[in-house]
Structures are given as structure tokens and as C-alpha cells.
Length: 142
Image 1 (cartoon, rainbow, N blue to C red):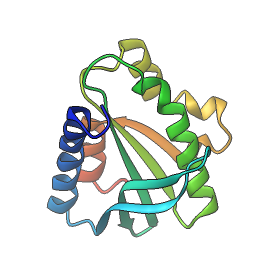
Image 2: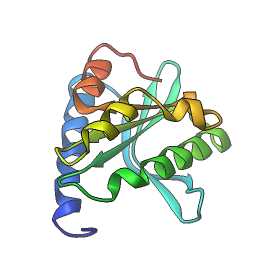
Image 3: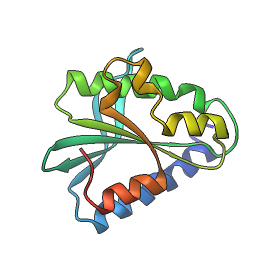
């Protein structure tokens, strides 16, 4: 539900990432226009995070209930690859949260299946919230 409850629940995921970024002393910006999506339109990054290796993009995706969001993930990854390869960003992360992802989809996504089918797929990682938090806690991003 764009603009409705679906957007508000997705904000909770962003809030959790923001807390971890702050608690670990990262420099970051929120809701930054960084380029264009592959099918047109602006790409707004949830977070741009600075590291000693450069800047990276974090995109948060929440799926409250089963639905079509999971079918849009490849477009999200492809758009993120496009933004990174045409801009000054080092890497991208898509963080999946919420109970609505199907088990098979989640397993495939977390195995980084996109890396085998998308050119430059290795510059984007798909992580669940727990793995992203762990990565941020030990400074292993970008």
C-alpha cells in the first residue's frame, strides 16, 4: 500500500538500520536521490553510508504480507547496479525485512542468485536484517 500502512511498516525497517548506523558511528545520509531507475524515474536511496572504502547505498525492502514486492526485487537490484555503475558508489545492499517473503524466495535471494544472472551483480548484496546489523556492527560494508 504505497503511502499507507505498507509504507509505515517499511519505515520501521529503515528506523532499525538508522539506529545501528548511529550506534556504530557511521556517517550517513537518508533518502538521497542518487540517479535513475532502469525504467526511468528517480532512484531514492534509503541510506548513503560512508566507509573508508567509499560510499555505499542501502535499500530497505519490507514485505508485511505475501504479495508482489518480491517480484519487484530483481528490478530493484538492477536499478541499484545501474546507479552504482553510472555513479560514484562502491557497493549496494538490499535489506529484506518482514514476515511476508515466501520461504523459497527468501532462500534464493539470500544465496545471492542475482549474481549469476545479472551483469555486475556482485556489486549488490541481498541481506536480511540480522545479517545487515551484524555486518554494520563489525564494519564490513562497502
